[in-house]
Image (cartoon, rainbow, N blue to C red; front, side, top):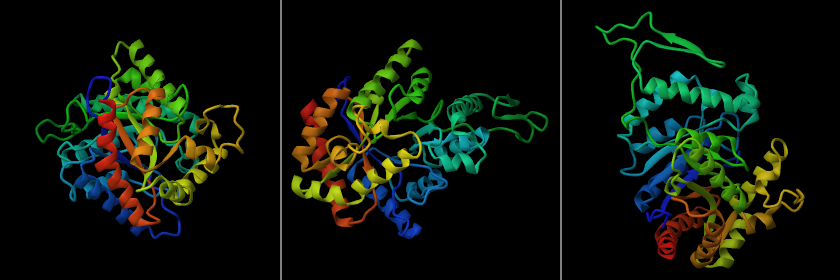
Length: 366
């Protein structure tokens, strides 16, 4: 249970991660199939990343993916994670997300943050150092548009616009739609690093934190402390039930099988890929429990003991309970989805997670 006695919920997050040689349509079809399976198994939520210039991470407009998946599912909630707010005009985001909330009949969550991809910034003529400030300005605009009527006007550092001269009450022209969920869908903010800038902002605004699967256990603990401190300074009461924690979990019928597969399937390959990306940008610090660790030691052997949790249900449960001892309780455990390089083993992983691991976890922490 969480700190307020609620059951720990379950979710899935896909970046998604597919090898460049896999046809794009096949990857999208598999991701949709996973979303439908998650709905049928009783997962509460499903998250989809946004990347514009990456051959491995292939969803450019997660809202389009969500629109298709909504029509094939009955109850699961969907959310982009994150919408790369800095890459879009905030008025356009406000209008299309309000539309999607109505289309979803309220089955929409939102995760809002800056892009983490250097080539996305370059493509759109932006600089990564501006991403955080652009995100905050855009969120302020979106919230204002969702809670006000025309005329609209904004003069900011990164965006300027007005809608006043052509507003017409008689024909109802010039009005931006508001979301179905009031005042807006649940908003989350992603956190990766120690002393996270994004999670400080989330605490101030009263948004929920979403910690990434790349974070070591002690970084997860820092994520919550950073978020909670910021929330309390803003006069808000942080609730651990709102905290989503993503983990790379691979389950099989035996620990031996799970470990062997995770070291050689798309889980292990994905962490090798992420480490190479980090070497070219922020560095491997977020992956490291100890910042003094060498990059050579920040490798698959280490990740298998830290970020990657592979085993049978009992072993994975033991690892999760140890993680929660360090991080403290959280409200939703989010399973990372990777490429189906061996579909049968991946389907078994998802089934074991929802039908055996989650009941066992909730029983253990009750």
